Image (cartoon, rainbow, N blue to C red; front, side, top):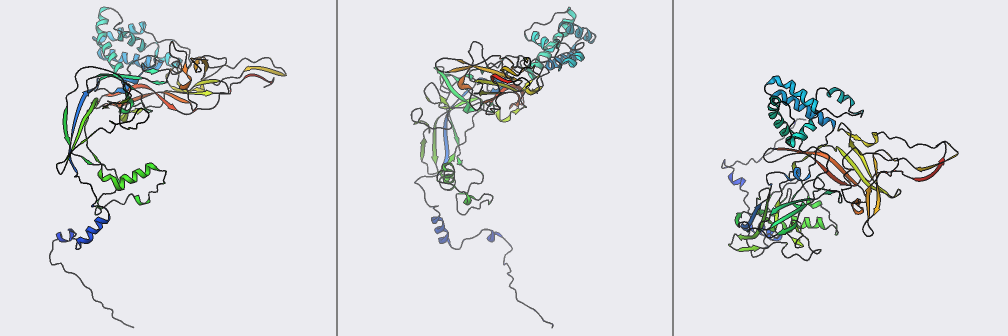
Length: 533
């Protein structure tokens, strides 16, 4: 059956083509809006105004060496003079002779003279025999040449050759210093065998004029940030740094995703704070919610730029609000309790007074931009209660070529066996390769020190440089408290970073990590076993 369907539709026709009135979002009931603001507590407040600007009176003192990062200076150690380094520097020397020796006809004569005076050292190590066979007749020992050049003891030949080699030696020494730094096997200057870590100190002039010594302990990433420093010593010095007042505009303390403090603000729906569940014992989360929802509106931050490599002391902070009121803000840690009963997060400890220092050290650190290589050497240090020893295990150590090599790949001569019998007496079981014993020895009082001593069946000579440096010269050994039950990891690795002026720094450093105790050695004494085992 045919039907007809029809309807009416109301179509509004705007009287004006402008969208200004529609976008203004006019409110027709101001009383309701005021009631909602009152309901949400937006009219609650103290008899005060919002801060308009802040006057900060400060003293700033420059730090010695502010234009150089601290880590390469304080933590670096020499590059091992292995065969690879000797050959590489020898090849570099030959290349520089070809480029800089004048006249060019003397290049072959100069190379032959250096090769005769500085031959590569002979070795029977299977890892380097092939390399030495290929380079002995063409490449001098670059490390030996650099050792003499660094002491200004240039090799002497005939007058013409000496003149031709003078610019070569200058460019050669400059390249080694810029790229490799120091060459040698000595432990780092600031390495402490007693604490198995760095013990670093710097001298500085404080903003109040005193001369001070700042001690530092790097963090687990080997960075020297401001919180790594303490005032170890201080003495009267010159006059204080001049007082400078700087005005800044404060802003609200906020973080990404924080709710807005006004009812009529549009917010992002990426974070739903209504689903945050906090137990009564979860104090951190409760404080976070309290700041975010209630008290965050009353917190402000006043930015103060401090030059890198300076010590800044804030003498006073004065806040002027929008009503003209002036408020002086004292230091938060000025009224701290006695040592052991205080809490402060952003202060430097002053060991000379037992309190906190009044300055902030903007350390010239490159920790945030530091790139780290895989460990060249990795040693585990832990206790073995069953054997009544502590062990230093070279999990990774460089071979004669300088290549990181797992310790289990080393060969080890077996212990001599007695003639077969029904029963056989075994004085001691074998020790795994690359395991070095630290024997306990009595120390002062009831304490015990661990001393590095060879034992029968153990590895003869460490491949790396960490194990020989465990016992410092003149000290009985490692203090017992320096070897935790959880064990230690001591690593050597390369670090690379770029400074603010574009300069690239490359250095070898050591890193200390907790944990990784590892398995027991299986060392057992005085066993009677079947003769055919």
